[in-house]
Length: 306
Image (tube, rainbow, N blue to C red; front, top):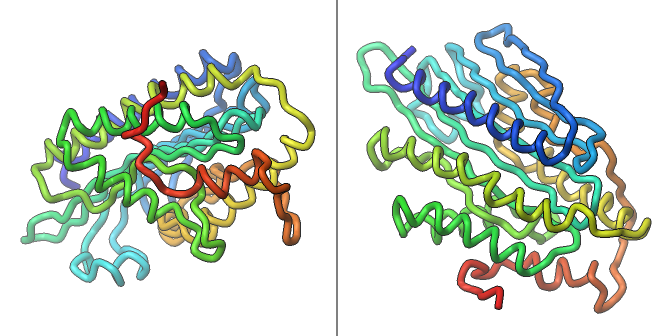
C-alpha cells in the first residue's frame, strides 16, 4: 500500500463526509445514523443514513476504502494494465432524496483508485462530480447550480468545466429511455494527466463546493406547498433514478463485483418509488416541461438569472 498517496486522500474523504453530514443535519434538524462495516477481502467503510427527516425522506453519505489482490473482470477488461496488480479504492458518495417534489434529488461522488505491482510504478487516478435531478425544475436553480460548478473548476483550470459538463451529460443518460437522468452538473473519471497534487486538488474543489451549490436550492424550495399529484410524479420520476443506478452506473457494478457491503452500495435507492405503464404528461404541463425542456442538455452556465 502506497501511504504517500492514500493517507492524505483518506484524511480528506473522511473529513468531507463529516462536514457534509453536519451541514445537512443543520438544515434538516434530524441526525444521520452510522454503520461501520468491514469487507472480508480487505477494507471497509462507514455508511451514514438520515431517514424520515424534516426535509429528506432519505439521505445517504458513504465513505469506503476497499483493497485486494484482484480486480473484477469488469475493471480489467477496460484497463488491461491493471491485471495482476493489488488495488486500493476509496471514495465518498452521496444521494439525497427529499420529501418535497420541489426540492431536487442530488448525487455527489469523489474517489481515488491506485493499483500497484512490485517493481513497477503505481497506476492511479481520481474521479467524481455532482449532478442534480429536479422534478419541478426552476431555471434559476439550474443556472446557479451550473455556475457554481463552473466557477469552482475555473479557479483550477478553465478548460475543465466544458469537458466535465459534457461528460456528465453523456454519462448520466438513460440510453434505454433516450432521456437524461437530470439537468447534469460535472463528472470526470480517469484523472491522471497532471501531477498527483493537482489531480487531488480537483476532487477537493468538487467536494468542498457541493454543499454551497446544493444547500441554497434546498433552502429556497423546502417549504413550497405541493399536491398529491406532484408527489406521485416525484415517485414516478424516481423510477428513472433506480433504472440508471441498476442498469448503467459503473460504481454500483464495481461495488457489487468487489464484494462491497450491499446495503451501503444500494443506499442511493429512494425509499419509495413507482412505475406506471406508458405514462404520458399532460401537454404544456410542468411535468411535460421537465422532459421537453429542462432535461435537454444546454449551456446553463452561460445563461442569466435576470
